[in-house]
Structures are given as C-alpha cells and as structure tokens.
Image 1 (spheres, rainbow, N blue to C red):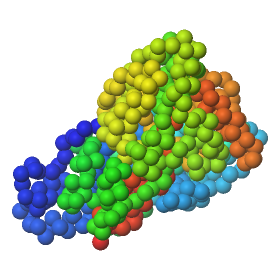
Image 2: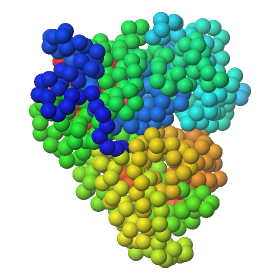
Image 3: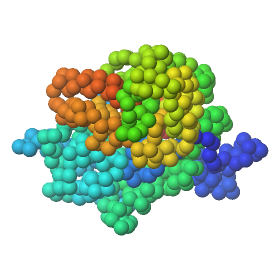
Image 4: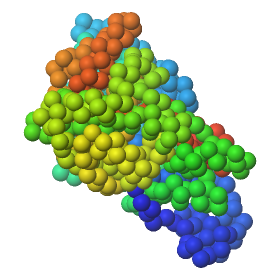
Length: 543
C-alpha cells in the first residue's frame, strides 16, 4: 500500500556520509551542531529512527484512526484498559485496568474494571470519568472505528458508567460477546483520552477531534512531539507514563516510501528500523551481520476489493468469481513474495480460531472467461483499478503487484486501468464507496475471527462489505451469530459457514496472507512486532 520517495530529513547526497547523518540527527532532535559529535552520539543512542511507508496516516485521534500507521502510533500514545504483551495474543492483560471481572446479568453481562494509579502526559490523573468520556466520545463521533463499540460491543451512550473515580462498568447486552469486547478494547478505539484536555480544544462539537488529529492527550509511554505531513512523525518519551520507556527517549517515523531509500538509509546508519524491505532486499539482509532480518507473522490479508453495488462493475457475482479464477496466486507468492506470504482464499486469516484453509479456486483463465461470457461480458470489460504507491504487504512494491494482477486479468478480458495514489487518498476514496476495483490490505483490529467476520461480511457494520457495496443478509446474520456465540465448537462451525458463503459470492479476491519483513540494525534489541501489527516502543533499547 504505498508510493514514491518523499522528503526526508537527510542532507543532500553530495555531503559526506558522516556530515549527512549528523545533520539529519540534528534536524530530527533539534540538537545544535555546535553541541558537538559527543552529544549527537548520546542523542543517537536514545533515539529510534524508523524508515517506512507511513503515508496511510490520516489522523492520530485514537477514536478516529483506523489505518495501520495510525494504530501503530496511537498504541504508543494512549493506554487502553487492557492490552497484549509482545507476541502473546492469546490473553488480554492489565493495562490501565489493574483487574476486571465479568458477571452475567439479566440483560447480558457486565465487565467491571478497577483502574490503576496512572497519569496523563498533562500530569492529570486518569479517572473513571475519563474512560466514560472516551467511550462516549467514540460512539458520538461515528468515526470509521465507532462500529467496534456500537455494532460489535453493542454499546450506546450510557452503557459505560463510573460508580467511583477508580471503577468503570461496561454493561454489555446479550447481543454482544464480553470476550470480544475485551479483545476489541485493546485496539486504539479503546485508547483513553484526557477528557479535560480534549474538551479544552473542542470546536463545533467535534470532541477535540480536529486538535487531536496532530496532538496527543494520552497516558501512553510516548507523547506526540510533531507530525510533519509526508515527512516524519516524532514521539517523545512521556515522563508521567506508568509503562515508561527506559532507554529510548524519542522515536522518529520517517517517511521513506520506497524500499531502496530504506535500504540505503539502513546501510548508512541513518535509520535503525526499515519497515518495508522488498523480498530481494530482505533475503540479502539475512546474510548481513550488521543487520537483523525479522520475518514477523501477520493476520493481514492482501486482497482485491470489487465494488458490487447496483450499477457498479462487479454487481454480477459471476464477474467476481471470474476474477478469483483469473488470479495466479502461486505466481504472486513464489515469484513476487519469494516465500513472504501464504496462500489463503477465505476471509479469516490463518492463525485465528475459525479460519478456513480451503482453497476452492485454482488458476483457471478458461473458467474465468466462461463466467464472463455467462454474465454477458464475452469480450470482457474495462475497470478503474485503484492502487497505492510504495510498498504493499509482504514488502512487494505495489506497482509490481498491480502489474501482475493487471496482466492476469487482461488474459481473460478484464482491462484494469491502474490509478496510483498515496494511501491516504486511496483509503478516502474506498471509504466513500468510490473504488470500482482496489488493491489493498486488511488486518483485524483485534485477534479474533470477528475482527474479520463482521467488517468483511456484515454490510450493516459499514466497513469493508459496505465499502464494496456488498449486502448479503445471510452473511450478516452468520457474522452476527458467530460474534456472540460463546461455545467454541459452535462458533467455529458458524465461521465455516460464513467463510464458505463469502468465498463464493463475496466482493473479495484474497491474494495472500503476508509475513511482514522488518529489518533492524544489530544494535537494536527488544524490537517485537506482533501479528496484530503492534510494536511497544518502550521495550526497545539500543546497545
């Protein structure tokens, strides 16, 4: 999902490597060059610089952000009531809540949280009133992630209460699963905002959202220093945080949209972490003793979304099926990804209970052509194909992946007109249901099958099924039933039915489930990216 090289903080290429790195560091950290190389070196040891394609960043408001980079950053700016630690995504653990209990009620269930003693970056204490405000804020904003609280947790204004300053009660109706509620509260939509600070910057009833777009008001281990659009995001250690960073005092996410720019910067020592190596570069990094090549797991899926609304190019389900037969998945995974991906065709990622490993579609251009003819398109058709610039999941340049997909589709008569744009623009069009055909990635907001089941299958959730104009009452009902089912065997059976329905008639052609190739310098320790895409910056150090 990405782009072309954007402005970085480095000096012109004509400067010496030493001078270039020193100037880049000075600009990034506001360290005067006159302070000398010793102070610059000290600053370098406590600064983590990440180079990557971060152009999907739209907002840093935890109640609105719904993109990969936004989630990565807000997870370090804001604390949630519960969270996951490292790669263990099997059990939620205490975060702002020191403990909690789930009890049945006449109308469903109740989750009672006891808060730990914590402070926001402003120095104000985190109270139960802040939690209530943060939840009500998300519900009222009706943001892209609000559905997690309103449609998945089935919360409404008044569902979350504060009996006292240290206790928060969530009243969950029978239509929601309390275990899923706990899981989704780990996502940035569950980030707790300093209510006093947000209210102080409210404009026209926006709950401070315009201000929080590029400011922070959380209790996480970092605070936002600044966000220079299309250039960098700088975070500083939060001295008031209870999960305080010990070694790293500043994190800089520098926009480097092309893998080649990241490779050059890694080799020169300009950055410490590269987010988007290509498969070729990643394989080379594995043999470099100065680098660490991390093949991290993901629950992400790279897929094609096909607009299936009335009057749209893929309204006829036979055309959608034709695309699935036309795509050469094996060629993509073996040639482009070089092993940094797994073959999957159903909507629940491998690794989550409820995933379906079935592969009903083989590469069959003849069958694709027959489906086109049956749908009244014997000569094929033209369609605009929205593609991001930069790197797609698995480290593949988006233009390379799009060219392969375009070639596959052309062989059966579907003429895909590639239109490249930066991720923020791409996602804006997608959210407005204005993407006829789109190449994009998706990862569940929380590690549960419902993190894909509801958004990809339930049109009413106004997420991916809605963006692709696909409304199937049977799919919606199955997604809703599976979400609230407590019995695990029954739940898995429901997801089997759902995945079989969507893979046959849904608006998606799953391309692959990628691994995320991340490369760090040898001096970086404690860097862990879990399958949900989270990185806890406070646990990282540089030796």
